Length: 311
Image (cartoon, rainbow, N blue to C red; front, side, top):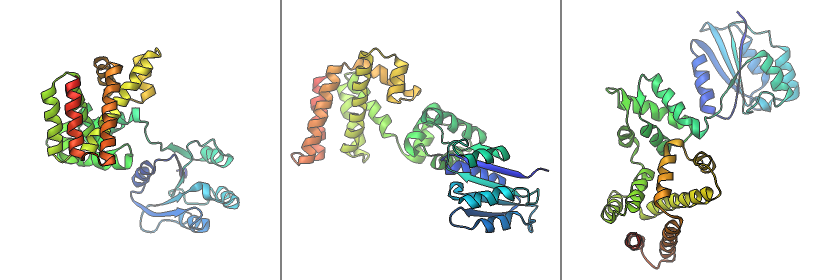
């Protein structure tokens, strides 16, 4: 059996940990950090026959911190360890061709990239992890997870595990399941608030805003998200005026395809002049709060009424 050596490259520490955990089964295990632990202690461990298990697993973090002479020693003693023992070398470099040392290692190792998914690829990453749990997940639930938890794999993975456990009797994780576990989506709520405004439904617009406030959402939080949505609509109009296609608008604004049609639909229902007027009212509201002219609640209510009357 040939000696197993793995080179993990990339910035995602969680993915690296996950791979190491998979390799760790039935091993004498020890981790080392270049620049902190001596290379001799690493070599002494991995070059020794296993004692309690069938093999040893040594992990060397921060590979790029090795001194030149240590790199030479590592390469020189490459075939000295027992064949069953595993060596994992970990680097934050994103490309194994970036240095002569990494290129040499890549010829001798199994190179495994550990890059966090791009935002556009994150839904597929989440869906694949959910399938490993024997489940499916709604698109809306996937995007809500991204919004509530963020885009870090190390935070999303346990959240997915928690959602799978929470829905153990069901085949599919729904948006309601995610809301029950991690709270409601303010972005989705403001989408709905803006939609009422665009539909000229004054009554539901006011009621939705009052519901959010009664549930404990701060006025400035609603205003902040609403301002972000309106700024995005303004940019949609600007980009479309430049002749960009819908797809290019989505790329420029980094809007996930799932949300793109919603945003474009909003832009079609909200002419640029109206968007600018609403943004102006938001600016006035923000100024009144910051200067102490009005309380947060009164300023927000004045914004709601004034905006609704303009519709």
